[in-house]
Length: 605
View 1 (cartoon, helix red, strand yellow):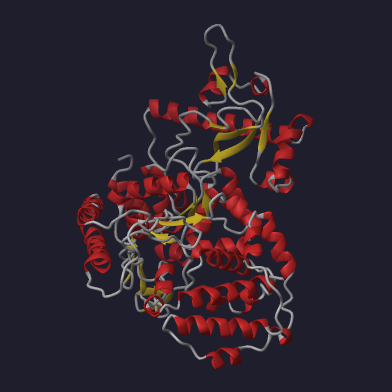
View 2 (tube, rainbow, N blue to C red):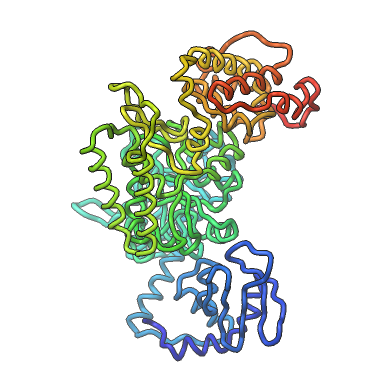
């Protein structure tokens, strides 16, 4: 430990904890103690106590508590050494000198920060020189202008072998420092020293304090391999323990109560520009334990946003299993899977920030992801396979070292196994040999096929949908009637898509058996959430851009006089067929016909 307890106690003694906490929390004196509403959980009656005499804070609602150092760690995401240094500077406590070797090493690092900052400024300037045109064109193609480039300090490394070296040596930077900062390759095999990056779009990478310590770089040649490279390991930079945009995202994440983890630099930039400033990304590798703990120091349940393809699923499962041994009360992960072929950058460009917000708000809990990973798309029709499932679930629980968390996972999995396999049911299952479909996150929520259909987790979209299902259709032979009603519903949505805006809540919970109609509904609800007016021409253009025009053609039909009333009648009929009737008259009275609804002022898509 670098600092002795005596020094730490002196810093605590000099720190006015009430004043420190009072920067964020409104405190009211009651006797010798200050009270306020806890900043760590929502409450109306103050249960958060701060005492200068004991130099401690404590919430009697959520249990959070600690000293001044813990306060900075909890509220600003600082590490312990960073909190000590910050408070020591504020209260005038001089920290002990290191050994001569420590001092020399620290001074060397300080000089390297200056070297990397000089390189960042060089790359920034080069982006706006004639040689940077290709990089600027690439950014324009991704929807980024000069202001965005300056906001994120994007740059360009010129072609050739020594443009940066020449610039830095002209600034009296030694070759040893250029190499130590990871900006050049040392001379070897008869080749002279040369720039590490050339003809690439540059993304500066900052440390926890915002100091530039490294770069990520994207090749501009179409056939270049690898497409992305990072600065190598240096005394300033370790890609397994740092995150892109972390310094900027940390404060926003503490305020938002969560932090978003995307897969790439452009995804983070797109998210931040759409208002999700609490976004970060790993640096070209799978998430590491150091990065996981860095995230948890900032927010208790980070949201990992992945593409819904096989690579995205693999990355999510890897992150989930990485987290298992480190889970503790209140700390977990959540997951967002975008439609196949979409990443946060493209999804926001196509659907808007509102649709992205919907995705984030419905993020999948870790426990649900693990259950799905072991059951979705798998044939669990035999006792042996079901026993195998229980064995795999036990292995998952055994990896959780926190006893209380492990116990809850064990109970949850046991309940799911019971509900899906052991609970007696009179409902007939699907025909033997029915095709199985793999889980496709973001598209219809995923389905199980085969001799057995597991029940979804409570509260999930599938659970809401399943709650309105009934076996009455199968028993009474009315499946054909239901298919006709769903086709009618699809025609109404295609001809009058603004219905999805007027009746979004009802449409979202409606159980649909036609996968094409389910996909149409999903896309329309995303558009509605993004703030679009859902006028027919705009919707058609949107579906065409996304390569989904076949959905519109699938349900093409003719217009009706009163589309909203027809929609509500069709919904009532479907619910009646499923054995869950609703009062159609109440629905009709809830809103006027669409022709009487005033314009909401929102623009076209």
